[in-house]
Length: 248
Length: 248
DNA sequence: CGTTAAGTTGAGATTACTCAATGGCGGTGG
DNA sequence: CCACCGCCATTGAGTAATCTCAACTTAACG
Image (cartoon, rainbow over all chains, first blue to last red; front, side, top):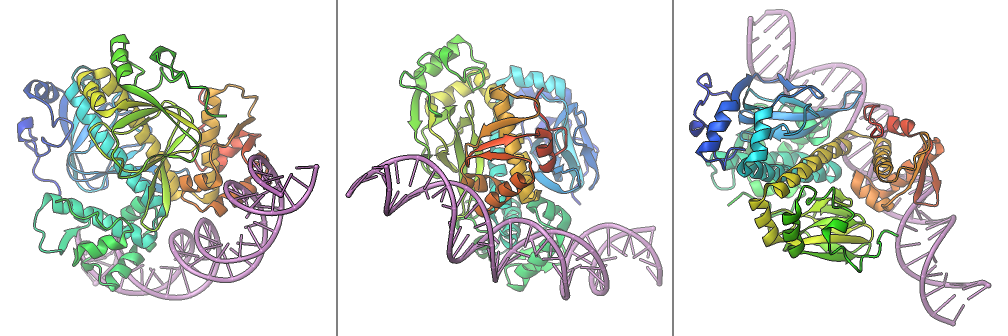
């Protein structure tokens, strides 16, 4: 369901669905031509690992469709998700050889990969890619810091409400079928993935989702489809400032 | 103790103690001249707030000496530290007007501030500053992700051990008076600041420090001076891979 | 229709938190 | 010089939140 037909693989960057938001967003035709020369597509099925922590990584990449997650693991197996990559998000770091975390396809996934060497050269010779990358990295840093607040200080209930609000907001940005304050979406994460995102056990995630349901803050259709009757009420449970509403 | 005499304020960037590591690290003389024109120094006493979350911020800055922290706060007062800035670290974001978190001087602090407008122009016209800023931001993102693992998955004891190991490592990088596996340093943070860093209460921080002391992993001289008889043993308590030792 | 993976629910254990009292140290003023 | 105050830190006792272990349910799939 997440992987559109990509056998044709947007050979022209101009046709690419993430063209306006990815690292290449600010590029002019000349730079696009260079990028097209160094790029190739890779597809992954849900659950597949894209890169193992510590492995050599000879490419950097943009998520074209689907969701990837970055996870870190302690020796004894405890794992924490540290990044959730949506279409147009970037993985990899110019100037480093090995990945510092596992990159896993959370859903079916298509990535637009750039060979690292030429990409690094492009970054150091053209300002537009470097500047876009800086913007995106600063955004990710902000997101990471918001996430740290969640991990360090929020209760289990607030964590769940926050995550649901984040996903709901993102969805309302893409598809614009919001009706009043009510909205609905599919959870792209299993309970376990949610627990790794939130620093909880999957049992606690399940219990808190049940609690939110019992309190009428969300409704479930099946295990994965969530209906939010009143988004503001959900945000209120997230512990954040009340004005963290929908982007206008 | 943290504030050297800065009345003279390194007017020449060439004399600046953070010249080789800050945003200006890669700059040539021409760019340094531009930077010198837009810079000014500000000093803060320990405890002072540099910027309030949400306030307009018309500068970006490098920490010259001392320590600053970035903190986020929930409505009800729970606070989480989300950044710990050491000399040469950078605050502020080109292309944004207001600060998303409080910036507080944890010790006496001197910052080298750049007026935002001209700095933004410099970033968009010269590649060297932008590229250095990208490097530093990527490093911060890595650190933030490591921190997320700590917040989400480590026990109180592991959190304390990790923080002590981080500070010990940093100190051994600057001052090189390491003798064998033993090392010692001053804690630059109060118990409360440590608790905000680690997502714990200050009582738990205190108890765990006492426990590490009882177990012989650290010794205390006064409240703030820590002696680590065997660094490897401390790292073992931090939950990280054992090889996270000293930089060689 | 059995098998499997994902999710839910319960009971008890554990960790960290809350509230409260106490200890130590440095500065200030009598 | 000493007493007092304020700040930082420690320690204790009881509580609350989350985790662990285990049983059970549901939906999907061959």
